[in-house]
Image (cartoon, rainbow, N blue to C red):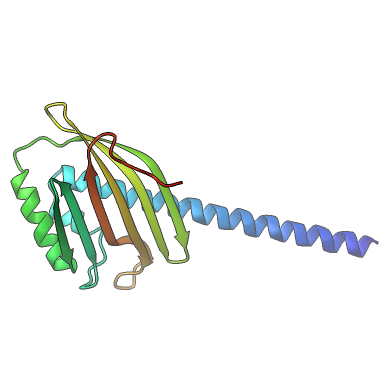
Length: 170
């Protein structure tokens, strides 16, 4: 009886330790992912293309898509094209103050070294106008040049939409 209880206790303790460790790892990864996405917005607001680009996977397979409203869709295939596209946009915005951003409906799903994140961003422009956007990002956790693994953005879509025009199927 004592052996059975000890065995049961050790099984439960192992499960608790594994679950706690797994939860802590996920929480740490979620925080690291959020830091990458917040850092991307901060780098954009500071008009810093180098900091912005450092948060992305430097690959010809990178996918970056922006639909800024008005029916236009801008797509950059590959890291170099994304940097060119964003660098051009940051030069256009160089003398404009950054927007005030509010993130809502933030959802993260992690599967090993891959994650996907969705959120809604409400940007308040300097004149008081508000712009809504949905973002979907795919991130990869990988090491660069022998460094510790870090989360980087591998794909992103960004879609602006007017108030009252977001339809979510639940």
